[in-house]
Each structure stands twice: as structure tokens, then as C-alpha cells.
Image 1 (cartoon, rainbow, N blue to C red):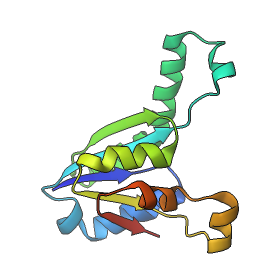
Image 2 (cartoon, helix red, strand yellow; image 1 turned 45 degrees about the vertical axis):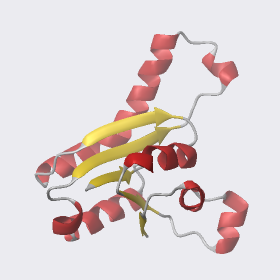
Image 3 (cartoon, rainbow, N blue to C red; image 1 turned 90 degrees about the vertical axis):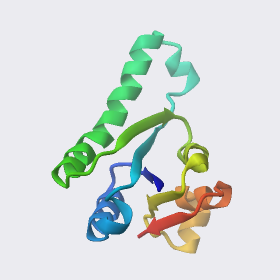
Length: 138
């Protein structure tokens, strides 16, 4: 099974990884795992002040800040995964990246309905725009 694991480096990501390890036979062993993160784009006006290579380096560094502890954690568990990052809006990119996967796993901060109305929720937006089955871990 091809599984996309969407991460952002938050405590929610840590809880999700703990859940996956607790159920490793189902979600980690023998699966084709891709760990995905979305890096927010630098506003166009600010981006125009930097050359393309510097901006790309910044995006790669930001992604690696999220990936580094996850690489270490998965390595200690003996789990291999591919790591992928894209630049842009998280919900749209996660939904798009999950299109060719069998399962999408992502964490949710567990905001209340009122909190979702005020702040929005990446998980809610992903669920609305995703056709892949989703395992949402709170």
C-alpha cells in the first residue's frame, strides 16, 4: 500500500507518529511511505529581493527542519520512507500529493467547530478536497 504521511513538525505530528508506531504492522511495515510537508511560500514582494537559488535554499532548509527529527525517528524504528516537500498552501498541496496514494495520514490539532470557523483548519480543507481515504489522528 502507498501511504502519504503529511507532517508539519508540530506536537500533533509527534502524536501521529506515536500512533503509527503503536500500529506499525498495519501502517509502517512493508508499506511504501512518503513523508510530505508543505512549506509556506515567501510573499512575492519579499521573494523578489532574493535570487532563485537563495530562495530555493531557504525552502529546503525549512523542509529539513521538519524532516530531520522524523528521519531520525523512523530510522530508529527501522522504517524507510521517501521525503517530499512542496512550496505553497498546505491543504491544497496535501490533497494534490495524496491523489496517487492508497491512504493519507495526517494529524489534526483538534480545534473546536468555532475554532475552525475563525482560524480555518488544514485538516478540514484537506478532507474537503481529497478523494483518497484519510486517517486523521488527533
